[in-house]
Amino acid sequence: MNREFRLYNTLTKKVEPLSLIEPGHLRFYSCGPTVYSYAHIGNFRSFLTADLILRTAQALGWKTTYVTNITDVGHLTNDDTIDASGEDRMASALQSSAGERFANVWDLSRHYSAALQSDWQTLNLLEPDVRPRATEHIREQIQTIEHLLSCGAAYQTSSGVYFSVESFADYGKLSGNKAAESLELAVRDVVVDPEKKDPRDFALWKKDADHLMQWHSPWGWGFPGWHIECSVMAQAYLGDEIDLHAGGEDLIFPHHECEIAQSEALTGRPFSRHWAHTRFLQVEGQKMSKRLGNFLTVKDLVHERGVPPLAVRLALISGQYRKPFNFTFATLRDSERHVKRFQEAFQLAKEAHDGGAEGTSTITETLKNRRQAVLNALLDDLNTPAAIAQALGGVRTILQSRNQLGVHAYSFMNQVSDLLGIVHRNTGPQNQELTMALGIGRPEGNTPENDPHQDSRIEELIQARTVAREARDFAAADKIRDELLKMNIVIEDSAGGTSWHKKSNI
Ligand code: AMP
Ligand code: ZN
Image (cartoon, rainbow, N blue to C red; front, side):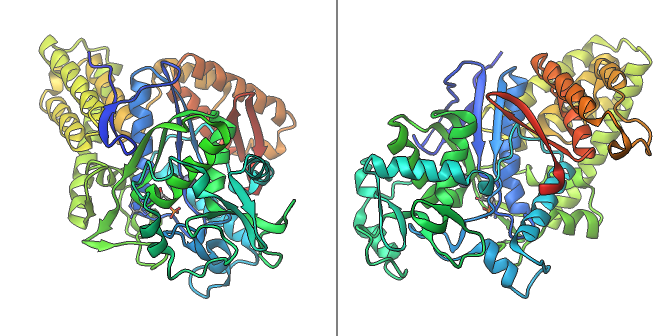
C-alpha cells in the first residue's frame, strides 16, 4: 500500500513526500483569515486545502497537530508590498460606511470570528487543535521582537521596529524575490519611513498612539506587524521547527517570506520543512476580493440561495488546489447532484449495515479498491478531481447493487466521507456508545447555564475527548468538541494539555 503523502513544496519547487520531523506526527500551521469581513469562498478554498491535508494525514494513521489562526490586528490594506502600508484593515472596516456597523473594533472582530466558525462547521471542516488569535499573543510578539533586536536582526526608528533583511542571508528562498533592486522598485511608490536602513526592511512593530487597537511595549504604544503574529503563534503551539505551513498563493510573498526570515533569524533552525499554497479561486472568470467587495460568501450561497452546504464544499474541492480554479454556478449544480447521490448511497449502505447483510465478495472487493484509489489520489499532491471521480465510481456501484450490499458498503461510505467530508459524519456503533455514555445530545432545556455541575461536566467531556484522540477515534473526538461548542465552550490544545474558556470573548 502507498504510504507516501506527496505534496508540492513551494520551497524546493518539487512534488515530494511529506517528511515529518517526528515520524507519524504532522505539525501543521495554516494562515487563517483577517476578520474584518465575512470570509469568502476563495478563503474557504484555501482552508479546504488544509482540511484535506489533515484528513489525508489522519487516514494514514498520523497524529496531527493543526493550528490555524485568526488575524485580528496588524493586517494593513496594502499588504502585497514588502513593507505593508495603509490602514489597519480592522480599523478601516469599522470606519467604513459599507457593510455592517459596529460600536467598536472588538465587536466587529467578535462578529466576524463567530461567522467564520459557523461557516467552518457549515462546510464540514475539521476543527483545528488550536485557533489562536493575534491579539491574544501580543506579549509573545513583543518578546520575540525584543529577541530579534538583541540578536541584531532588527532595529528601531522613530516610527517602529523593523526587521533587517540584510541580516538574513536566506531572504528570498521561498518566493525567489531576492534582488534588492527589484524589491526597491516594488516599494518605490510606497511612503517609506526615511529612517529605514533598507527599503526591503519590514515592520515588526508600528508605533502609533492613536491606533484603535494599541498595546504598551518597550517602544511605546502601538501594534504588531502582520507577519510576526504567525511566526510567534506557530512557534508557541508547534515548536521552533514545523512540518508544513500553508496558505493562499498571495501569501508566498511577502507574508511567508517574512515569516521565514523572522523565525529562522530567531532560532537558527529551518522554520517549516514544507510549504503548500493554494491557487486563487475566481468566480465566473472574475477575481474576487474582500477588499473589492465582489465576493461570494458561504452565507450568500447557503442561507440566501439555499444551496446545500456540502454541495458548496464539493464544488470548492472539485479542482486540484494548485490549478487555476474558476468557480461557476454550473459546477455548483453538478456538485449538488453528486452530493444527493452520495447521500442516497450512504442511506442504502447504512440500511445494509443495520440489517447485518453480508454483501457479495465482488462488490466488497470493488469498494475496497475504490477506497484505496480515493486515498491514493489524495496522496498524489491532493488530486481531488481524481479522488472525487473514484468516490463517485464507488457510489455508482452501491446505487446499482442494492441487494448485494453488506457492511463493507457502509465502511466505504464512512471512509470516503472521512477523507472528503462530503457526507456528514456518522459516528458508528462504538462512538454511539461513547456518545450515550457521555449523555451527548441530551434534550433541549437542560442547558449548561442551569446545570450546577457544568465545570465538572466540561472536564469530563475534555477527558473523554483526550481518550478518543489517543484511540485515534477522531469522529468521536470531533463530536465531543462540537458538543462543547454548543455549550459555548471553546477548547484549546497545547503542549501542556487542553484548556477551555467560555465563547463570549470570540
Ligand atoms: P485573508 O483573510 O485575506 O487574510 O485570507 C485568508 C486566506 O485565504 C489566506 O490563506 C489567503 O491566501 C486565502 N485567499 C484569499 N483570497 C483567496 C482566493 N481568491 N482563492 C484562494 N485563497 C484565497
Ligand atoms: Zn499568516
